Length: 57
Image (cartoon, rainbow, N blue to C red; front, side, top):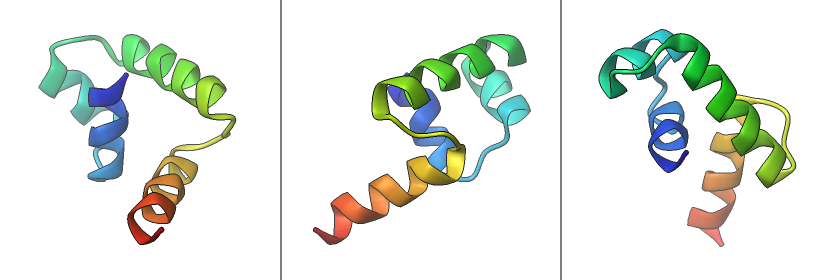
């Protein structure tokens, strides 16, 4: 989950993430769904916002 979230923060697409981690796009999507639920967010943009908030805090 951390790897997927990290790649989202770098701007990678789900397809790019899948290729880099040698998993399917469906696996990436499922992982992102779990990340969203755990963090209480709804989109990949929110992951970036959360990270920016922690970096500036």
